Length: 93
View 1 (cartoon, one colour):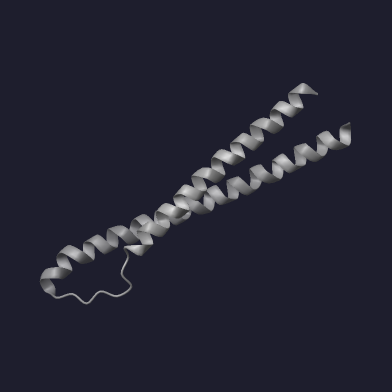
View 2 (cartoon, rainbow, N blue to C red; view 1 turned 120 degrees about the vertical axis):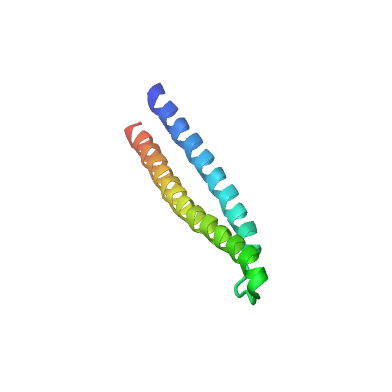
């Protein structure tokens, strides 16, 4: 039974790490979105400089959103697996 409790510990540690990274990325994404402007009114000279900066920022936010979704799914799966192993340990004793 010692191996089963170690596997539960590994699952819980993995879940904790994935969730911590998820929280950090969500906070980072919120700081990026605070720099985004909804509407820009630019003349020709400003458009070259600021519009490209906004497009780069939107690209980063879109990529970050996909990573956040994947990490959220991984965190949920690890939590469900941990709960399953915990229940299995409890029922087998």
